[in-house]
Length: 426
Image 1: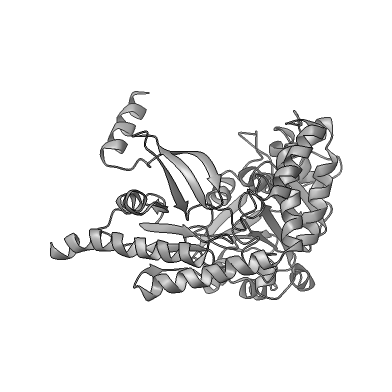
Image 2: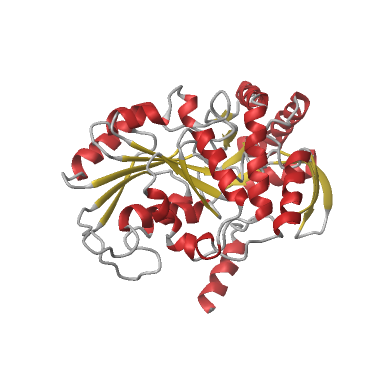
């Protein structure tokens, strides 16, 4: 452990460690937090929550979780294959299938396990089956800025989970430039072989840049590769883009069936931690045969199924979204307003979704920027300094008022004045 001790000591010395805060209570976008380093407590206005539609504190959602606990208890205490599913699982899968326009859905306890299960199921199938021989290699193309859950799954895609060595055909992974369909086309021409099984994986909305994958162009390209699989991770797309919050297909006024008609297999991963006031994930497909493979993947059969209160909260949240599309319209309106106000004031606010990254000059410390926003203005934003280009990551949601957004912009301007002037004079 000596290496770990020395590394972490140096990590702290050069300021790479994040500031830690404990939340004590929430009321809308007002949060009482405690700074772990000092013990100081204060009520702050948050712009760093992923509660896109403000459903985490919705009474009907909380009551659904409570009712589920009263009926089923706090946990299912096993996986669904070994001890059965609860009816809420089936209801949630059906609700997601209708929401995403794909008829078959499988639940997972989180996105990381869902993505790994998909690699296991698609690349390596399940168990040896008499009379069937798996001989075709898999080529996977991934956007270079895809989320860590995708990167992790692809890094481990060479063998089925739980096996150090496998006997499946080889899995080859290649990255393409961010949202660059021309580069994707070049990589497909270069690496695809006639017998390959082809999969392209992309975030729908990118979590650090707030931009949107070029789905129609990707479909046009992939229609040249019959039976290719297009995976969209809609973690930051569900509830935030599309007229009714259904995600990237609705954003571009198309349906998954349009991809199917062109010989492509669309898969959608939905997560519940952003728009659905819960935790967990799901993969949806029009191919029923994929579901049993996902269900017996090591990440399904080797862990607990989604707990009753989390399942119920996600289920009620999606029903709320379907009943009240004005929530989606509100977050989209807030997004346009806040990004435009920041740009008007000279900030480099990139992207086009409710994830609003503000790129900082290289000499400005995002941690210090975020700390001054808290201490001087009572506004909580996310400083990013070690996983992407230095920035302040702001998230707009349906509960933010114009007054709150104006307060954020004013705080950003005041903090900029404090930090930029010494830099300019130097």
